[in-house]
Image (cartoon, rainbow, N blue to C red; front, side, top):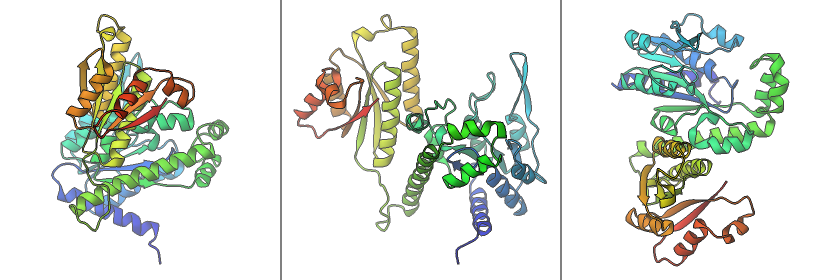
Length: 389
């Protein structure tokens, strides 16, 4: 007889309890969902209640119920921290009170809306940075986020939904988490909840169904969420097994990936995110982001906006776990080959920039075509992955 949902939740709470009790550093647990309304906040509150029953000091640091009756009902009996009011541009904005949480020092704090951007002037720009601070100070955190907010998936989500998700969380947060739980619903169940008014105000339902909550969108987001958690679990199993031969999980290998970018903001972001995903999937030993600065791209020849975009892209690479390499050379292809040799790269990740078909792009000339020709004639064992944007 399969275990009930209640018994699975009890086991989850007990597992998290053991983690909290066994670590000096705070423990991080993340509930990941495919979209709003799957029940992430509800599940966090259920677990908070179960942990409280086990004797832990639990605090609701920030909870967003969205007025959903089932979620509101779960708040009863749990200590809820008052939100801090911050005045910004003449308006009062409610934010999580990070200082109050650290002064109160609960064993476990519930922090909803992980991808939230804090009001300007806050200690940290993003809530995920608040969470990192809490964990570093020995306070365990249970939090929630939707899959579309993961940084490395931004380009895929944009293609699936047509929406540019501006609030994003670096993937390293999930990789650092002690537990990641996929809160799953079928597409039919989620759309039914939406139609019943259990997610948004009824007036917003038709627009939501016709846009973000289209069945095909949700199906693809669901696949992303399931795949993400499966990959994370595979890494955890490998780590726990200590290299046991019985576990055929991804292992770190000798692959080293080299992403080649220029000052093109959009192209660079897509190449960086794709390289990050590939490095994870391959279990690569390391991955790098190379920017070859030509004399045409010196500081006095490119605009401040372009320089700012380049800096942001290099910062993105760092957040995703890449190592930054910058060289000055007017022979871009030769510079890439030399860096690839120095870093023992096994895979180059480059972009195609023309709006024409793939074969036309490769035959129109340019750095990518020259690089492919050079690699083909090189004795070095080096493959190339082309990112279409």
